[in-house]
Image (tube, rainbow, N blue to C red; front, side):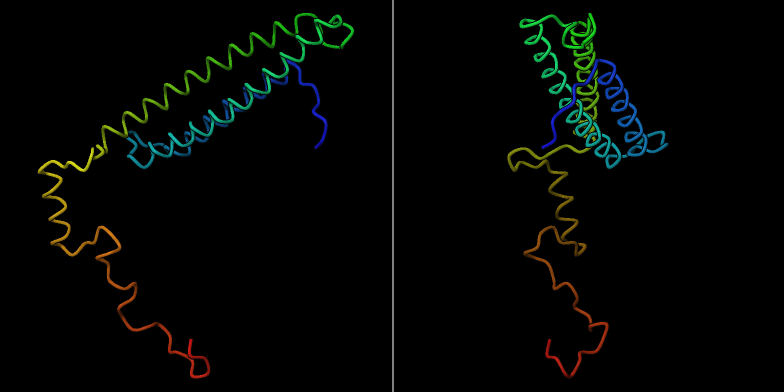
Length: 170
């Protein structure tokens, strides 16, 4: 593994800015330019935010390690002798607070998306179904639609598209 290079507060600020821009672009791509996105688009947006939060937490862990390293060095020697400018630790700690604020905001948005998806697609609880759900299931079976593999027909009941070779039985 290659040795890790020290990152400055400016490097972390740029990384945070890049992550925010990437998350924004991915959200626009997931939702598109629709006025009212459907459940599929909302689910895609939630996945984007989940991945963005994962990446943001990784940045926060790296930032925490950098802060701890500077604190340890600061207790042994002066920061100026280590090459980090005065106030670097303060800048990193302030940036850590900013990363936390962004994470909280994104978690809130993700929770809103989850709530909206739950509202649009109510889940069945404990196998209990409302009468409307039972009627819908019965109606689907009556129309010949299959809900599980057990009642499914073979994948291709019609004749194969090509003739079998006489040379190989396969």
